[in-house]
Length: 299
Ligand SMILES: Nc1ncnc2c1ncn2[C@@H]1O[C@H](COP(=O)(O)OP(=O)(O)OP(=O)(O)O)[C@@H](O)[C@H]1O
Ligand SMILES: [Mg+2]
Image (cartoon, rainbow, N blue to C red):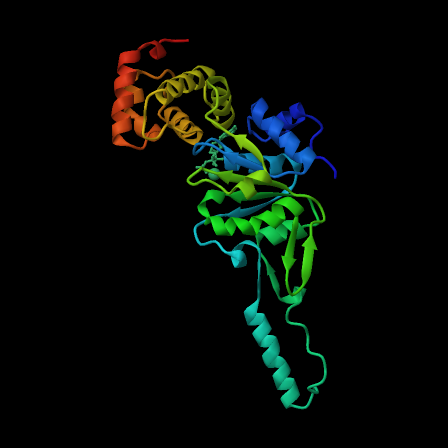
């Protein structure tokens, strides 16, 4: 199997070039997954860059991203493949017309309506059949019923799909697979066993500052610094929903739009609704910020 990355630092650099800032842990697991040909199960709080990781790995390696968005009720027909019934039916009707007109005999072999021509590939089969390098993202896998997880097992361990009418389709190249989960339910042991595990938590203050600087155009370093520090303070409070990286970015963009150079307590409190989505959280954070004080001084 050809590898996409030479080393852990190469993963970090590659991702950084496409604006994804990975820490050592993230880069290490991606490197191993590539080397071992194993899927990665990425878990962690909302908005910490789980989905983006798969997208960025695809971008940095020039691979095509194939995404299976999971939801309750997702089935084989939407995840793997289905037969194009309409086309099959039309073919059967066309043959009947030909026979009735005497153009064809009944003993002439009809086209096999369970052949490639009538198959509709869904994301999992598409990833297996791809000729070019692909990254397969199975997003929010915890949303499917536990029984549906079984659909994934053959793909994740053998990189193949069995189609009763056609036989087994085996991958031409081993796709790099990322499964993401918000942990809304426990995943099956069988699924976990097949994957490397990666927990992505909120970034360190330094990394979040770098993410802000990378993702928010025109932001001053001192403002990015202050944003990262205040967000860290707020995450330490007991909240219903801690601010995610995406909310940090929204907040930073808001402050830039408002022309803020140095955040005052009043400006922070006035814009907390960008960062927090529960009124009780906003009140708690406002109180904490008022009692703090140190973060309002210049660094
Ligand atoms: N390490 C990072 N480097 C650059 N951008 C990041 C990083 N982490 C998060 N982001 C940014 O945060 C945003 C949210 O990331 P993403 O959608 O991947 O979160 P998620 O973990 O999949 O969340 P959810 O669980 O809600 O699906 C993205 O727009 C991404 O640009
Ligand atoms: Mg996501």
